Image (cartoon, rainbow, N blue to C red):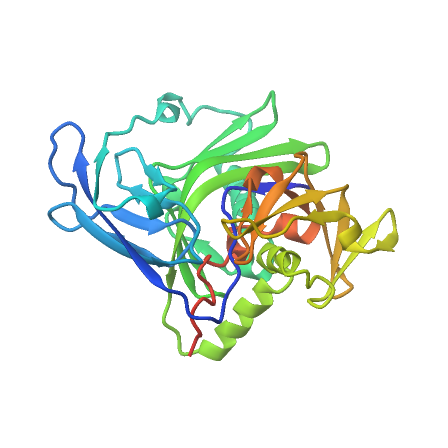
Length: 332
């Protein structure tokens, strides 16, 4: 089963990175009045802030953070800023949102009870790993679910962020769904497609060593780990073995890699689908329908939807996700 997720991935660095600041003002597009308590955060990180009573905000980031800046306020359309390094002190005008999905009558009998729909949603949204099972959604009532009997698809959306508490990894996660769809086959789930933005709150804990171990175990063998190892041509050193049709192969005969470009990225061409084994027993698959994709030393890759992971990497869900700035600073 393949999974496509919006969220990009960054690996941890132990080096010191220089911080930069991005600031702006958020106003209502109709009244031109400042909006207070607007959430401003870098997608899939712990880096975030909110606007003051004048609608002003200022947020710091480091070079390794490459994710989109998200401006989010309940009842308004979200704004996404990708080229924040070229802008500063900007004024953002938010307009009220109209959720057309809410117009649909969702309480009608669609052939599946809400309890069953919620069970399927949580399984595919949080994942079935120990991390996923440790997660609890704190506002299930805000999640809206609809089953299409003809297409055998289950859709989910919410007008408010889904609030997840990850007990194993000690994060509170605020996830704003953009798209979520489960396609059911004859023998269960055929595929899952989801996208959204997320903000992580790192929880204080007295079990710091235990939590650090859980986070490291989650990282090892993950997409973050794999992409960084690929960039540095350290796949074998990091414990990865590759196969094609049952035979062990040299991965660099299947990955064509350019030199680093002016943006710090490498262009990758994947010859054909590869089986991936981490430390000999954890199996994943990578394939791509596009001619080439880009990666950088931090673990970013794009386009996100152009790389399909199956197996262990493909089954990773919100419960197994780490923030993009994980490990950028040493933990105590």
